[in-house]
Image 1 (cartoon, helix red, strand yellow):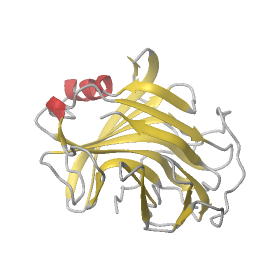
Image 2 (cartoon, rainbow, N blue to C red; image 1 turned 135 degrees about the vertical axis):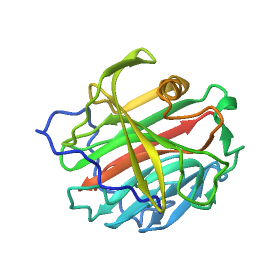
Image 3 (spheres, rainbow, N blue to C red; image 1 turned 120 degrees about the horizontal axis):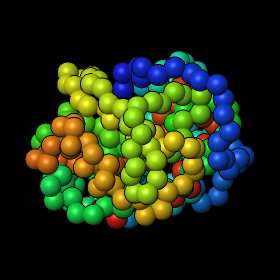
Length: 248
């Protein structure tokens, strides 16, 4: 379980987000699969895995067989993150997908990501893509180098930091050291300055290069995995990843 320390973020006034409101999905729907708390299901010939990563609340997911999922039920109701339901490539705590992961940062190529999410006005969460880095080719434990997060939106959650231009659009960036499981790592957050619900062909290298320029990520480290989904403070039912793809 990829536990995170309480985020040093506070609730802000609600603001309108780009949303695609959807009804809750029944876990009994034909042809799909229910994924309970702490469970996972791999899809696309094990090119991706969907995981209910819970560490303080319980989350039930539904996957129709494609590269995405929907949150059918969530008990998240705290002022800190208690769940991170996601779909991933690479490694998460001994669970791996197909591909040449972990990848050396200096040899990562030119990875691009497609991500489309369904959101809601209610709740306290972020919709995000996260890249994990370790100082060694780690497949089994907590990444000990950095977590680089790309937030598409963050209803009722504050995000700050100086503005940067990445891949033709504006983001704020902030960083601090966090820790758990006996290790510490850099938490780097790029938050889109306006809420969005999708990115297509998003270059990931520019985010990594900015992190490298500050010493937060090293070229000698290993990129152990990438995931897309939601960190949940409160609520979450009805949120979903419609499609996630990474070409690396």
